[in-house]
Image 1 (cartoon, rainbow, N blue to C red):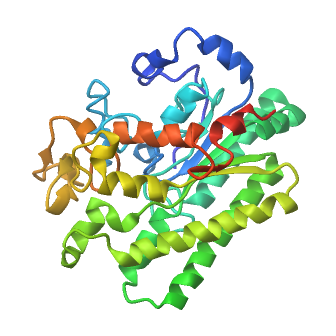
Image 2: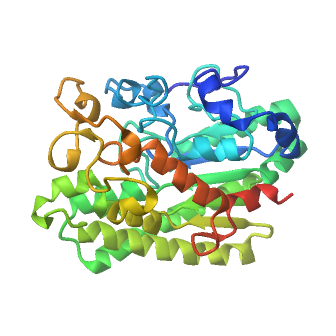
Length: 366
C-alpha cells in the first residue's frame, strides 16, 4: 500500500475547484481555524485513492470520460466532476481534499481515506475497507501530533467533522452472494455491519473525534448496475437490496441515538441519502434532470456497466452529451449535479432530511 506523506497544497484542480469560494475564503477559514474534515467511505466519496494502491487492476476513473466536466481531468473520482465531500469541503471553506494516498499530500484541512469498493467489513480484496481507513487515520493523527503536540491535536480532532459513507458495498456483496438468504440471515448480517461501524466510531471518539456525519445507505436496488443484473424485474428496484438498506438505516439511526448517553460530547448527523436519491431516480424532472433510470455513461441495460471501456478500457460504451441532465453518470455513481444537490442537503438540510444536526451546524459547534 502506498504511504502517506506531506506536501504544500492541493495541486489537483485548484483553479477549477476553488473559484467558487471567492474572496471570503481567508476570512471564513480563520473562523473555522483548525476545524478539519476527515472523510471515510466507499466509491461515492473516493477522490482517487484506489489508483495509489498496490494493485495491477486498472482504475477506470483515472481516464476519460470520468472528470469530463473538470476540463477532462480524470482524477479517480467516479463522476463527471466533483463528488459530495468536495462540495462539503468548499462549503466549510476548506481546500478540496485530495486522496490521502496521493504522494506528497498534506493534512492542513483534513484527509480523505475513502476507497472505491470499501466496506465496513472486509468485503473486497485490494481496497481500503473501514479497518484500513481507520489505520491510516491513526497515522495521520500521529503526524498531526508531531506537528502540534498531543493536547492541541486532540482539541483539533474535537472541533473537526468526520464524514462517512459506508455500508453499501457490504450489502451489495451479501445480496449478490446470497440472493436466497432468509430474513433472519439478513438481520444477523446487518447487525454485524452496524456493530462494526459503531465500534469504529468509538475508536474515533477515543482518539478525540466528537462530531460524526453520516450519509446512510442508498436505494441500492434502484441503481442502473443492479437493475441491469436483474432484468427479470423489468426496471423496477430490486427488492432484496432495498430491504437490506432500510434495515441498516433504521438500525444505524437507533445506534447513534444511544451513543451520546455513553460518549459525552458526541454529536452526530444522518443524511437520508436513501430517500433523497430514490426520489431523484423516480422523479428526475422535479430536481432539474431529464433522466433518472439510465446512466449517462455505459453499455447494456440502463448503461449499467463499462463506462470508460470497462476494466481493460477497450469495451464499447455510450456517452451522453450533457451529464447534468442525468441523475447517474455511470451504473453506480451520480453526476456532479446530483452530488452538488446531495451535498447541499448534507450541509444545510432540515432535520427530517439531515438530522438531528446538519453538517453546517456540526462545523459551527466549538
